[in-house]
Amino acid sequence: MKIYLDTSVLNRIFDNQSQVRIYLEATAVLLIFMLIDKGYLELVSSEVLIYENENNPYEERKLFVNSLIRKAKLFQELDEEILERAKEMETLGIKGLDALHIACAERLKVDYFLTCDDKIIKKYKGVILVKNPVEFLLNILKEED
Image 1: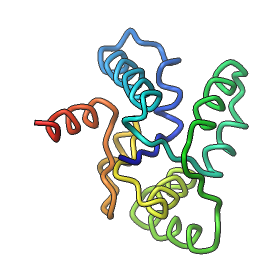
Image 2 (image 1 turned 30 degrees about the vertical axis):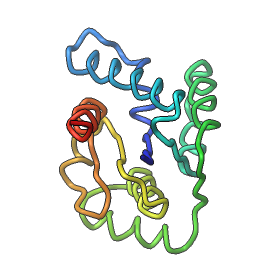
Image 3 (image 1 turned 180 degrees about the vertical axis):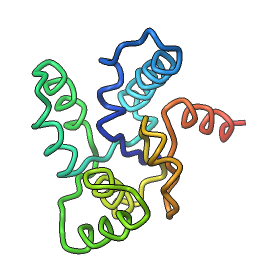
Image 4 (image 1 turned 90 degrees about the vertical axis):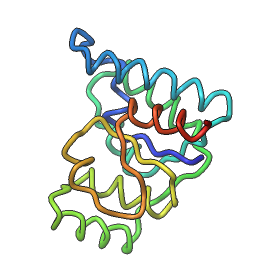
């Protein structure tokens, strides 16, 4: 199963976990990282993830995310088609880097695009499943039954 993790997911474990939702998402993200390491999930990445991570001002986070990105089995570079698809998504209210992430994920034909951004989850209407990390884990547990 191919998954694309946006930067909100890749950095979730560094967020203040005093809120229940953030704590649950961070725990789910750790489980997802474990499933990637065990080979149950196939991580994919993109030029957009690298660009966004390189602009992260927190060195520890940047190094951690880079170590995850290196585990990706597939990598998507930007091209004109992806830029055009991102522009289409911007008309639906999915802006900038978020639109580029999703366009890359679509091109890579992922099974799931994971984000902690509720706006993306609500606004995206396309060919891939967009979930937050907790919903994703619940979905794959149901699929196993």
